[in-house]
Length: 301
Image 1 (cartoon, one colour):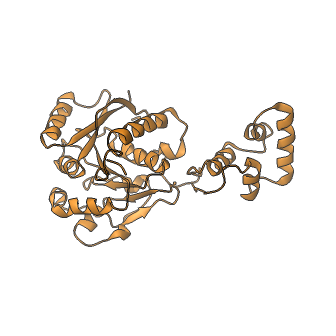
Image 2 (tube, helix red, strand yellow):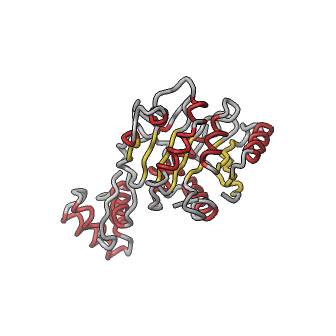
Image 3 (spheres, one colour):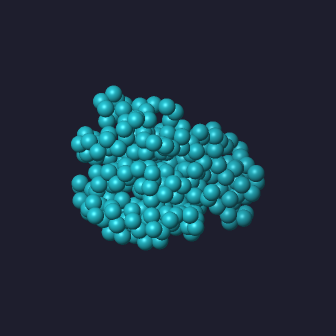
Protein backbone atom coordinates (compact mmCIF):
# COMPACT_ATOMS: atom_id res chain seq x y z
CA UNK A 1 0.00 0.00 0.00
CA UNK A 2 1.61 3.19 -1.15
CA UNK A 3 0.40 6.24 0.74
CA UNK A 4 3.33 8.43 -0.18
CA UNK A 5 1.90 9.71 -3.44
CA UNK A 6 -0.83 12.07 -2.33
CA UNK A 7 -2.11 14.16 -5.19
CA UNK A 8 -4.36 17.18 -4.86
CA UNK A 9 -7.39 16.66 -7.03
CA UNK A 10 -9.53 19.59 -6.00
CA UNK A 11 -9.50 22.27 -3.37
CA UNK A 12 -12.89 23.59 -2.40
CA UNK A 13 -13.35 26.71 -0.27
CA UNK A 14 -12.63 26.06 3.52
CA UNK A 15 -9.79 29.60 9.51
CA UNK A 16 -6.10 29.96 10.44
CA UNK A 17 -4.33 31.67 12.81
CA UNK A 18 10.75 18.78 14.37
CA UNK A 19 15.75 16.38 14.21
CA UNK A 20 16.67 19.49 15.84
CA UNK A 21 15.75 22.96 14.82
CA UNK A 22 18.52 25.42 15.58
CA UNK A 23 17.58 29.10 15.50
CA UNK A 24 20.73 30.74 14.26
CA UNK A 25 21.94 33.36 11.80
CA UNK A 26 21.26 32.12 8.27
CA UNK A 27 24.36 33.94 7.04
CA UNK A 28 26.65 31.49 8.83
CA UNK A 29 28.81 29.51 6.45
CA UNK A 30 28.18 25.79 6.08
CA UNK A 31 31.74 24.95 7.10
CA UNK A 32 31.44 26.98 10.29
CA UNK A 33 28.15 25.31 11.17
CA UNK A 34 29.60 21.83 10.68
CA UNK A 35 32.76 22.64 12.64
CA UNK A 36 30.71 24.00 15.54
CA UNK A 37 28.57 20.84 15.47
CA UNK A 38 31.64 18.61 15.56
CA UNK A 39 30.86 17.15 12.14
CA UNK A 40 33.88 18.59 10.33
CA UNK A 41 37.47 19.47 11.23
CA UNK A 42 39.22 22.72 10.33
CA UNK A 43 41.65 20.82 8.11
CA UNK A 44 38.85 19.11 6.19
CA UNK A 45 37.10 22.44 5.79
CA UNK A 46 40.21 23.95 4.18
CA UNK A 47 40.45 20.96 1.80
CA UNK A 48 36.83 21.43 0.77
CA UNK A 49 37.32 25.17 0.25
CA UNK A 50 40.34 24.51 -1.95
CA UNK A 51 38.43 22.00 -4.05
CA UNK A 52 35.51 24.40 -4.23
CA UNK A 53 37.73 27.15 -5.68
CA UNK A 54 39.07 24.77 -8.34
CA UNK A 55 35.78 23.12 -9.29
CA UNK A 56 33.32 25.96 -8.90
CA UNK A 57 30.99 23.64 -7.01
CA UNK A 58 29.12 24.58 -3.88
CA UNK A 59 30.60 23.77 -0.48
CA UNK A 60 28.30 20.84 0.16
CA UNK A 61 28.83 19.38 -3.31
CA UNK A 62 32.57 19.75 -2.95
CA UNK A 63 32.54 18.04 0.45
CA UNK A 64 30.56 15.12 -0.89
CA UNK A 65 32.82 14.81 -3.93
CA UNK A 66 35.84 14.53 -1.63
CA UNK A 67 34.07 12.06 0.64
CA UNK A 68 34.37 14.43 3.58
CA UNK A 69 30.68 15.20 3.90
CA UNK A 70 27.59 13.02 3.81
CA UNK A 71 24.17 13.97 2.54
CA UNK A 72 23.06 14.06 6.15
CA UNK A 73 25.82 16.58 7.00
CA UNK A 74 24.60 18.88 4.22
CA UNK A 75 20.98 18.55 5.29
CA UNK A 76 21.95 19.40 8.86
CA UNK A 77 23.84 22.53 7.83
CA UNK A 78 21.02 23.69 5.55
CA UNK A 79 18.51 23.18 8.36
CA UNK A 80 20.54 25.57 10.51
CA UNK A 81 21.01 28.14 7.75
CA UNK A 82 17.34 28.21 6.84
CA UNK A 83 15.86 27.67 10.32
CA UNK A 84 14.31 24.38 9.24
CA UNK A 85 13.49 21.30 11.29
CA UNK A 86 16.03 18.52 10.98
CA UNK A 87 15.38 14.83 11.48
CA UNK A 88 18.33 12.52 12.02
CA UNK A 89 18.32 9.12 10.29
CA UNK A 90 18.39 7.54 13.75
CA UNK A 91 15.09 9.17 14.77
CA UNK A 92 12.41 6.84 16.12
CA UNK A 93 9.66 8.73 14.31
CA UNK A 94 7.87 6.65 11.68
CA UNK A 95 9.23 6.77 8.14
CA UNK A 96 5.66 7.48 7.05
CA UNK A 97 6.33 11.06 8.17
CA UNK A 98 7.76 11.93 4.77
CA UNK A 99 7.38 15.67 5.37
CA UNK A 100 10.03 15.34 8.08
CA UNK A 101 12.38 12.84 6.43
CA UNK A 102 12.05 13.78 2.75
CA UNK A 103 11.18 17.50 2.65
CA UNK A 104 12.37 17.85 -0.96
CA UNK A 105 10.38 14.92 -2.36
CA UNK A 106 7.56 15.40 -4.91
CA UNK A 107 4.96 14.07 -2.47
CA UNK A 108 5.92 16.72 0.10
CA UNK A 109 5.74 19.43 -2.55
CA UNK A 110 2.16 18.26 -3.13
CA UNK A 111 1.53 18.63 0.59
CA UNK A 112 2.90 22.18 0.50
CA UNK A 113 0.58 23.00 -2.37
CA UNK A 114 -2.32 21.68 -0.33
CA UNK A 115 -1.15 23.68 2.69
CA UNK A 116 -1.07 26.88 0.63
CA UNK A 117 -4.62 26.36 -0.57
CA UNK A 118 -5.86 25.60 2.94
CA UNK A 119 -4.15 28.72 4.31
CA UNK A 120 -5.74 30.91 1.66
CA UNK A 121 -9.19 29.37 1.74
CA UNK A 122 -9.72 28.49 5.38
CA UNK A 123 -7.12 29.26 8.02
CA UNK A 124 -6.45 32.85 6.95
CA UNK A 125 -10.12 33.81 6.78
CA UNK A 126 -10.97 34.28 10.43
CA UNK A 127 -9.58 33.88 13.93
CA UNK A 128 -12.28 31.34 14.82
CA UNK A 129 -11.22 29.00 12.01
CA UNK A 130 -8.56 26.86 13.59
CA UNK A 131 -9.75 23.27 13.18
CA UNK A 132 -9.76 20.95 10.18
CA UNK A 133 -11.00 17.36 10.26
CA UNK A 134 -9.28 14.92 7.90
CA UNK A 135 -12.01 12.46 6.92
CA UNK A 136 -12.75 9.62 4.53
CA UNK A 137 -15.61 7.27 3.82
CA UNK A 138 -13.68 4.00 3.92
CA UNK A 139 -10.86 2.34 5.85
CA UNK A 140 -7.35 2.37 4.38
CA UNK A 141 -7.73 5.66 2.51
CA UNK A 142 -4.68 7.25 4.17
CA UNK A 143 -6.29 9.69 6.61
CA UNK A 144 -3.71 9.27 9.38
CA UNK A 145 -0.79 9.53 6.96
CA UNK A 146 -2.18 12.70 5.43
CA UNK A 147 -3.17 14.27 8.76
CA UNK A 148 0.30 13.69 10.25
CA UNK A 149 2.23 15.00 7.27
CA UNK A 150 -0.10 17.94 6.76
CA UNK A 151 0.42 18.91 10.40
CA UNK A 152 4.18 18.74 9.88
CA UNK A 153 4.19 21.03 6.84
CA UNK A 154 2.01 23.55 8.70
CA UNK A 155 4.48 23.51 11.60
CA UNK A 156 7.36 24.00 9.14
CA UNK A 157 5.60 27.16 7.99
CA UNK A 158 5.92 28.48 11.54
CA UNK A 159 2.28 27.91 12.47
CA UNK A 160 1.66 26.69 16.01
CA UNK A 161 0.18 23.36 15.00
CA UNK A 162 -1.68 20.72 16.99
CA UNK A 163 -2.36 17.26 15.58
CA UNK A 164 -5.32 15.63 17.34
CA UNK A 165 -6.05 11.92 17.04
CA UNK A 166 -9.84 11.72 17.33
CA UNK A 167 -9.88 8.14 16.08
CA UNK A 168 -10.61 6.54 19.44
CA UNK A 169 -11.33 3.18 17.80
CA UNK A 170 -8.12 2.38 15.91
CA UNK A 171 -5.70 5.26 16.59
CA UNK A 172 -2.36 5.56 14.80
CA UNK A 173 -0.79 8.94 15.60
CA UNK A 174 0.84 7.71 18.81
CA UNK A 175 2.59 5.04 16.72
CA UNK A 176 3.70 7.42 13.98
CA UNK A 177 5.24 9.80 16.53
CA UNK A 178 6.45 7.03 18.87
CA UNK A 179 4.55 8.37 21.86
CA UNK A 180 3.72 5.06 23.49
CA UNK A 181 0.61 4.52 25.56
CA UNK A 182 -0.23 7.74 27.31
CA UNK A 183 -3.13 9.97 28.29
CA UNK A 184 -4.81 11.65 25.34
CA UNK A 185 -8.07 13.00 23.98
CA UNK A 186 -10.36 10.46 25.63
CA UNK A 187 -8.75 11.10 29.01
CA UNK A 188 -9.12 14.88 28.62
CA UNK A 189 -12.79 14.52 27.68
CA UNK A 190 -13.60 12.63 30.89
CA UNK A 191 -11.46 14.89 33.09
CA UNK A 192 -8.70 12.37 33.79
CA UNK A 193 -5.98 14.46 32.09
CA UNK A 194 -5.21 18.07 31.37
CA UNK A 195 -2.81 19.98 29.17
CA UNK A 196 -0.02 17.55 30.05
CA UNK A 197 -1.58 15.16 27.52
CA UNK A 198 -0.34 17.42 24.72
CA UNK A 199 3.13 16.39 23.61
CA UNK A 200 5.51 18.80 21.91
CA UNK A 201 7.55 17.00 19.27
CA UNK A 202 11.13 18.04 19.99
CA UNK A 203 12.29 17.08 16.51
CA UNK A 204 9.63 19.26 14.90
CA UNK A 205 9.35 22.74 16.42
CA UNK A 206 5.86 24.27 16.42
CA UNK A 207 4.21 20.82 16.36
CA UNK A 208 2.35 19.21 19.25
CA UNK A 209 0.37 15.98 19.23
CA UNK A 210 -2.66 14.99 21.28
CA UNK A 211 -2.97 11.22 20.94
CA UNK A 212 -6.28 9.39 21.23
CA UNK A 213 -5.55 8.14 24.74
CA UNK A 214 -7.23 5.15 26.33
CA UNK A 215 -9.70 3.39 24.02
CA UNK A 216 -13.14 4.20 25.51
CA UNK A 217 -16.29 2.08 25.18
CA UNK A 218 -18.28 5.13 24.03
CA UNK A 219 -16.21 7.29 21.61
CA UNK A 220 -19.29 8.62 19.79
CA UNK A 221 -20.82 9.87 23.03
CA UNK A 222 -17.56 11.48 24.15
CA UNK A 223 -17.18 13.36 20.88
CA UNK A 224 -20.83 14.37 20.88
CA UNK A 225 -20.69 16.08 24.26
CA UNK A 226 -20.38 19.82 24.57
CA UNK A 227 -17.04 19.56 26.33
CA UNK A 228 -15.40 18.38 23.08
CA UNK A 229 -16.43 21.67 21.45
CA UNK A 230 -15.24 23.54 24.51
CA UNK A 231 -11.91 21.70 24.41
CA UNK A 232 -11.38 22.65 20.76
CA UNK A 233 -12.15 26.29 21.55
CA UNK A 234 -9.73 26.24 24.47
CA UNK A 235 -6.95 24.61 22.43
CA UNK A 236 -7.56 27.11 19.64
CA UNK A 237 -6.36 29.86 21.97
CA UNK A 238 -2.88 28.32 21.99
CA UNK A 239 -2.63 27.01 18.43
CA UNK A 240 -2.99 28.51 14.96
CA UNK A 241 -3.85 25.24 13.20
CA UNK A 242 -5.48 22.07 14.54
CA UNK A 243 -5.47 19.04 12.24
CA UNK A 244 -7.84 16.30 13.46
CA UNK A 245 -7.55 12.65 12.46
CA UNK A 246 -10.81 10.64 12.39
CA UNK A 247 -12.14 7.09 11.91
CA UNK A 248 -13.68 6.05 8.55
CA UNK A 249 -17.28 7.19 8.13
CA UNK A 250 -18.53 3.76 7.03
CA UNK A 251 -17.45 2.29 10.38
CA UNK A 252 -19.03 4.86 12.69
CA UNK A 253 -20.49 8.38 12.87
CA UNK A 254 -17.49 9.83 14.70
CA UNK A 255 -16.11 11.58 11.61
CA UNK A 256 -19.38 13.48 11.11
CA UNK A 257 -19.33 14.66 14.72
CA UNK A 258 -15.68 15.76 14.61
CA UNK A 259 -16.17 17.57 11.30
CA UNK A 260 -19.17 19.46 12.67
CA UNK A 261 -17.21 20.46 15.78
CA UNK A 262 -14.20 21.52 13.71
CA UNK A 263 -16.36 23.36 11.18
CA UNK A 264 -14.45 22.13 8.14
CA UNK A 265 -13.31 18.87 6.59
CA UNK A 266 -10.73 17.69 4.08
CA UNK A 267 -11.88 14.52 2.31
CA UNK A 268 -9.42 11.73 1.52
CA UNK A 269 -9.94 8.95 -1.03
CA UNK A 270 -7.72 6.27 -2.54
CA UNK A 271 -7.42 5.54 -6.23
CA UNK A 272 -8.78 2.12 -7.14
CA UNK A 273 -9.99 1.42 -3.60
CA UNK A 274 -12.46 3.99 -2.31
CA UNK A 275 -16.12 3.36 -2.99
CA UNK A 276 -17.59 6.20 -5.03
CA UNK A 277 -21.14 5.59 -3.72
CA UNK A 278 -19.81 5.69 -0.14
CA UNK A 279 -17.85 8.84 -0.88
CA UNK A 280 -20.82 10.57 -2.53
CA UNK A 281 -23.13 9.67 0.34
CA UNK A 282 -20.58 10.81 2.93
CA UNK A 283 -19.97 14.12 1.15
CA UNK A 284 -23.71 14.75 0.92
CA UNK A 285 -24.22 14.06 4.61
CA UNK A 286 -21.40 16.42 5.62
CA UNK A 287 -22.98 19.21 3.59
CA UNK A 288 -26.34 18.50 5.22
CA UNK A 289 -24.69 18.93 8.62
CA UNK A 290 -23.33 22.33 7.52
CA UNK A 291 -19.68 21.27 7.37
CA UNK A 292 -17.49 23.34 5.05
CA UNK A 293 -15.76 20.99 2.61
CA UNK A 294 -12.41 22.62 2.04
CA UNK A 295 -10.96 20.21 -0.45
CA UNK A 296 -10.22 16.63 -1.42
CA UNK A 297 -7.06 14.55 -1.77
CA UNK A 298 -6.63 11.42 -3.88
CA UNK A 299 -3.98 8.96 -2.69
CA UNK A 300 -2.07 6.76 -5.16
CA UNK A 301 -3.14 8.89 -8.14
